[in-house]
Length: 307
Length: 326
Image (cartoon, rainbow over all chains, first blue to last red; front, side, top):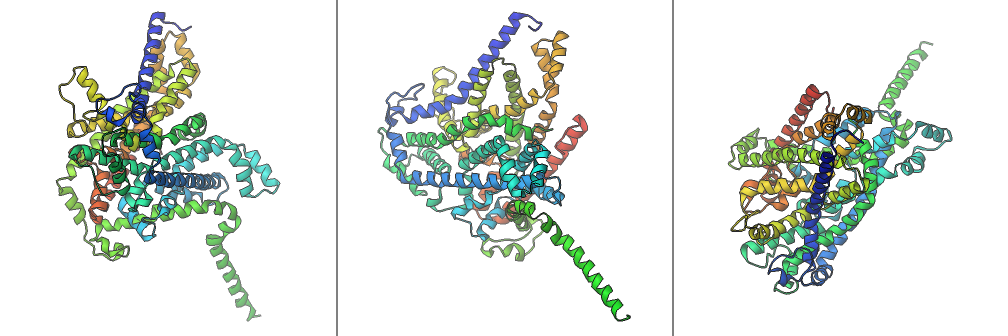
């Protein structure tokens, strides 16, 4: 088809495909490795790593994780938080973006200004910490919800670019029929924005599910730990175990219990617990993202690669 | 008559003043009540959670103690730039700046070309099904948290982990490498894991930009006898230059913004000399050691420099390539 020598062309194609396959292996293997290790007997792992398949297959670590009260409670905190924040923040952000995208909105410069300031200036960690204390959000479940209910101005820009694709005539005829702004938003704009809604919902959900900063900064109770935070502590105490050869770290009840229960070398070790918890905690996002993937290009790129 | 005249003019004036006032305060609200109520939740949240903390920056110029409470932000004694001076003379300051800049700059220098190359190669793949599979698979790490992705690599890079196991058995090394216990490997680990996590995801932007390149340019170049490599070099790359520039601006302006979530997971007391960055230092001095004023001073310094970097890199980009963020 194209000029140039065919051997070179074939070599190029083959090389490209080889590189892609190598990259895919590099991406997936760490995850696969932790899956098979978590299904392998912990004592057996001490003899050396497994590579492609568990040597001594067992559900013991998964059972230990899935029956641990601390982990289940953390999963509940994380999941409820993710659902609430995603739903409300997508509503608030898309609604803000709709009003913002109306050409007849007065004082638009004001909203642009506060939007950009909020994107580029921030008080930083310590002033935010003070604010959470002042508002009584410190060490409260609400600290997981309220501060993130607005999805940020960046998302507004993406929504805005997508709304621009809706024909103006639709709005005009709706207006003429006497539809209120809310009616237009809920019955015309939202149904026509499904791709971007789906894409941004996934991003928000992933961000919230994966967040551990809020737990680290703004809480101290053990009953407010998120899944990611609990796993972080698990990893850190495992390292501490390896570094100091002492088993109990004591600062975190749930982790200490989990490690103590599995202290001996058997089917379940601290290492396999950690891996099983990591795999379990990432499952919801892994299940979620392929479904939303077809919306990425349609929904997000229109907004972000305008330049 | 003479009595009525001033009365009406006063009334008129009153009405005019009221009208002007109502124009300032109420008019917009009355005429666009629905739109305003749609904006309200977000505006409220921006003011509460983004703007209120800005008052807290006063702490950087004051002798604030946590026992003073929120009122203390305003009532504590001023002490000028003392916190900033102490910061710049602190022995931990320069290593921390070096780590922050080093990890970010080297990271960008590695990840931008790699991502670009990956996108270029992916763009050359003819089979759209294979392309979709590659994309789906390489997106995976972006959706895992740093706790999990970092945790996986801590396990893999452990002294009895699989990487050391392979290196030992293949005869590259005689003793296991202490990837995370030895400061000299930390930058490498941070940069490599950062690259791997967002390689596929970062390529989305490039691929979209490539799809936007005028197809007739490709055809014209092909007719002129340009092979695929030549076209990649002379058509595709110039076509995505604006996108590339925007990403470079982001990289430069985010130079002081280390990914806290990544570094904190990989950090431990042994690799601290190479892994202490601004964000982890702020967390440590502020929330663990309760030195609110110093921590705020560092945060403020960082924000100011980040803003300067953003504006100046945007200016340079506008000058050179006529593209920029604003």
